[in-house]
Length: 251
Ligand SMILES: Nc1ncnc2c1ncn2[C@@H]1O[C@H](COP(=O)(O)OP(=O)(O)OP(=O)(O)O)[C@@H](O)[C@H]1O
Image 1 (tube, rainbow, N blue to C red):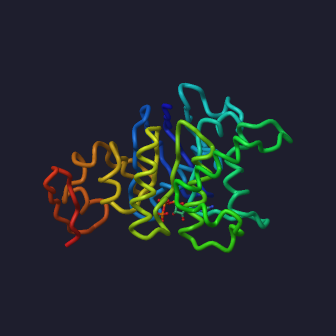
Image 2 (cartoon, rainbow, N blue to C red):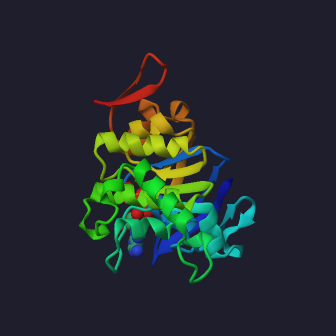
Image 3 (cartoon, helix red, strand yellow):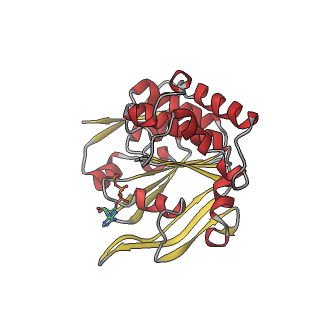
């Protein structure tokens, strides 16, 4: 699926948080959004997954304007792993993952054997099948994050939006999540803090600072010590490993 955001403007009261931000995720590209705290990454993603309505600008899914598509129809195309996941009621892990199936069902249609199979498979993929009957609220932050990824996998979409997906995860599960997501072979848009994770998995990066895109390109093209100094005010050294992949050392 192709995803485009054009000239997105968002303000909270008098303060402008996004100023005419445009991004383009081509089909099956893994696109990262990086940038300092408060630069507007989550706000941009929230506009895309319909939690926020931009003041100006337009979002396109496969050439259709998001505002012209029903929420159910967009949920069939786009799944979300957000930063914070709260439920007001007690749900088991299985119930949370089954929620991923709801865009595919009619109102009041019950989950069927195929839905259960898909949910089990998704939980297995993220290594959470043994927690299937646990209450979601009793899980650790990292376990919850993996269940939310399972819910997104069960949604079976051609686009996945991730807001700092590795936040709560230890290094094993950070890499596991990124590998799972990459291997889906679908369009991915992810806000990522860890620059080395972004380098390792993204084909293309957008850099946000103070609500504006200040850089874009492949990680190798844009992540230079000079650019990182300008954006993050840190000193770095870029090294290449034996496969030619770059790694950022913070000095
Ligand atoms: N509901 C709100 N009301 C007022 N200001 C808000 C609101 N939500 C976000 N902001 C502000 O908008 C700016 C952008 O926030 P956003 O969460 O998009 O940044 P971010 O780049 O995702 O940050 P982080 O890396 O810290 O998660 C911040 O200055 C934040 O304080």
